[in-house]
Image (cartoon, rainbow, N blue to C red; front, side, top):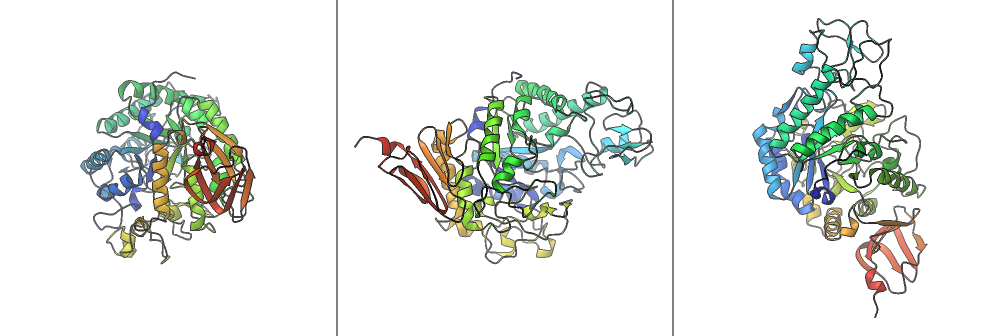
Length: 536
C-alpha cells in the first residue's frame, strides 16, 4: 500500500449529511433551493449533531444532469447564489463546528464547457477522448468542425475528460496513454480546481464517478494511480482536507488515496450488494440488472446481515488504517429508507444500526425525519435512468414545517423544483422537534451517544454474535447492540448477558437478561454491559 500522510484527525468523528441543494431550502422564492437557504437552516444540522456536510454539484451548469454537467468549475450556478454566498455558508457552518465539502465532477464536463466547445473545432486538442474517423460504439458524433466523434461518460451531453487508456489497441490508434499531454493537463486542472476551493475554506470533496477516469482499466489500477498522485499533492498542500470517493469499493479506492469511500448501490465485486442487502426492498430506484436479493431491513425477515458483515470485514481488512468506510442511509441516486412498503415504525432500528456500526455514517437530507421516496414523478434534469429507476423520488423538497410547500419555498407550488410529498401525514422537522418520541429526536440522541462513546465510533472493535434476527453485536467489548428489523419478535441466547440486566442507553422493545436478548417487532437497543458485570 502506498504511504500517505495521516488522515485528518477530525475525520474519524465525522457524521456526514448530504444536501441536494435544489431541494433543501429556498431563500428567494424562485422554487429552487440555494446557499442562503442552507445557511438559514444550519442550526438544524448543528442541533442534530452533524459535523460534516457534502453538497451535490453547485457549479455553473445547464443542468441536463442535475449539475453533474459542469460548464465552469470555478463559479457556482447562479440559481444557488454567488461565490460570496457559498463563502458565507462555509463561514457560518464553521462557526457551528460543521465542515463543508463540495461534489467534484472529475471525469467529464458539460458539452457546453468552453474546453469542449474549443476541442470540437480543434483536432489537436486532447482534453477529451476523440475518435477522428467514424463513430465507434458508444461515441457521439462531433458537434463542431472537428471530424469524428467523442466519448461521453454518461449522458451524451457529458463528454469524458481524457485521463488516458490503461491499454493500447492497434485498432484504436486514437487511444492515448495516461502520461500523454491531454491526460497530464487534466490532472493539473483537477489540482487547480481543488486548490481554488480548498484555499477558500472548503474542507474537501466527494468525487463523482471516481472509478471512471482512465478507460479500459479492468482492475482500476491506472485510475488508482491518478488518485495516488493527487493524494500526494493534497497531503503536501492541504493536509487537513479530505477526499471521499463515489467508487463503491473501499478495498480499492482507499488504498489508492481516498480518505473514505461509501458502500453504494453499485461498485465492488457484487455490484453494490452490501448496501442493497441492507436497504433495497425492490421499490423506488430499482435497476433491472440487479440480482434479486432479500434485504435485511424488511418486515418479512427473509434477509440476513451476513452479506453486509462479510463485505465490510473484507473491505476493512484491505483498508486497514489507511482510511474509512462510510455507510449512507440513501443518496440522490438511490431510494430513501422510507420507500414502498417500508413504514415509519421500521426506521428507528435502521438508524440504531447505522449509527452504531464501525463505519462513518452518512445521512441523506430528510432521512432523519423519515421523508419517503415519492413514485411517479416526471423526468427532472435527467432523473430517469430506466423503467423502474427514477431518481426524482429521492430528491423532493425538504419538509420543514406545516406551512405552504412544507416550508421549503414561498414560490407557487407549480414552480417548485419538484413537488412536495402530497401525503397530509408527511413528516416535518418542526413537528418532530416538538415530539421527544420522534425519529428526529432518536437520531439526535444516537449521534450524541456515538460522539460521547468512542467505542461506538469507527475505531472501536466489533464482535458479531448473531447475524440473523435479531442482529446482535458488541462494540469495544462493552456495548451490546440488538437490532430486529422484522415484524415478529426474535430472541438470541448469549452469555455476554448475565443475570443482571445491562444498562439501556437507547432502547425500544428490547430486553436483555439471564443470558437472553429478546426483541419485539422492529425493536432496537444499545446497552452498556459494564453495570451487569460490576460487583454488587
